[in-house]
Amino acid sequence: MPPRLKLRDIAFFERPVHFARPFRFGAVTINATPQLFVRVEIEVEGKGSAVGASAELLVPKWFDKRPELSPVQTIDELRRSLAIARGLYLARTGFLTAFDLHASCIGAQVATCAQQNIPALAAAYGPAEIDKAILDALLRAIEANFFDGMAANIAGIDARLAPDLKDADLATFLAGRKPLPRVAIRHTVGLDDTVEGEGGVADVLENAGANYFKLKMSGDPAADTARLTRIGKELDTLGRDHKVTLDANEQYADLDALQALIDRLDREPALRSIASRLLYVEQPMPRDITRQSPLGSLAARGFIIDEADDSYDAFPAARALGYRGISSKSCKGLYKSIVNATRAAKWSAGGERFFVTGEDLTCQAGLAVQQDLALGAFIGVTHAERNGHHYVDGFGDTPAAEAQAFAIAHPDLYADAGQGIRLSIHDGDLLTGSLHAAGFATSIHPDWSALRPLEQPKSPREQLA
Image 1 (cartoon, one colour):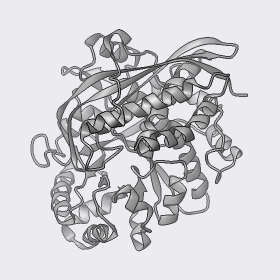
Image 2: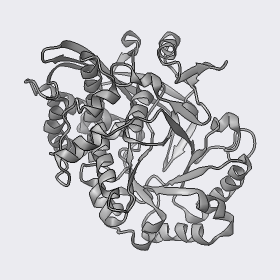
Image 3: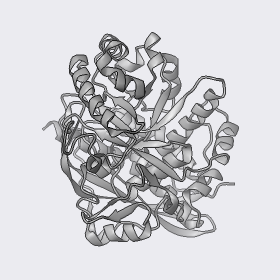
Image 4: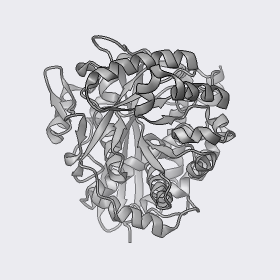
């Protein structure tokens, strides 16, 4: 029987994060944004109290790309999502399993956010961050690590939010997990990143020896073809086997525009290098267009959804449209990732291949990257986008003492090679050994005294003022 818990408190904090270089994806360029930190206190039935934590960037213009909203307004949506979720979670005053809490709140969360014109993807952000912190506290209370705890279904995950599955499907999937000892990094090439020469995609000081590359696209087939041709030439100089994925971040307007890109990939000799190494194409069209557009013959190329993954039924709906995969991101919900990984395993048993990928946008050194890395290693994600080590200088604005504490506690993940503490990459991989500490992939927490309280969200009326 999974342990039951009662929430005592949820507190939110933030810290500024300044990027070492601009990161352009879709229609936005990020130079700085706050990082959220969540601190929860729980009482575990028969075990006493425990404190848990989580962290994630508050990323503008990804959860909600509506052009009429400013980047600041979309960050404020995430703050409101957190505030709404906090109220719903704390209103559950009895002892419940961790998944009971999530399942009993997620419907009301999405509905309440919708009333405030917050889309479902942003609505899920609040519960996602609270759930991670609750799980951290629960694991600490029973002195278990994430991998063992989840294999034993410590959270009490069942199929109530995924009627296409049975409870036994989830239990079997969880019990059979063997966490990966290492996960390959996928090096992100943003739309403003240097392609050739020093600091370019083939520079080992830039790509950290990666064997996987994630290439951002603009949504213009001609411009993307020209840029991918240049990138392909550079990657060919690596002298080693490598793979690529493409990510349009909803920039391809419709199936016709997408068909134009795929036709070029299939036919143009200059793109042969990229096309032959292409694993999949991520979220090419806007989420609303995606839901109305069966891929047809395009499905043969392999497509996944990311921004369109805003509900528990998104993956089955995407499968019906021809999509083969879906992204796992802690900021979209760890329980949904596990449900989707269970689906992929069950569907693949029928002969066709379905898969879950690691697409990180919001992970920075410390809690965020460790918890997302552990989730991916648990569900079998062999390579994951890890742009955090690339666009932010190590631990960024984190106090030196806090960064040092993480490096001491997780020496296989961090190192100081003379430029400050940053992710330690071993032949293109991240190691997961130290993530087996009691708790959710971390043996320490941030320095709470060095954080400021989360900025209070504006009301919808104030946003329009």
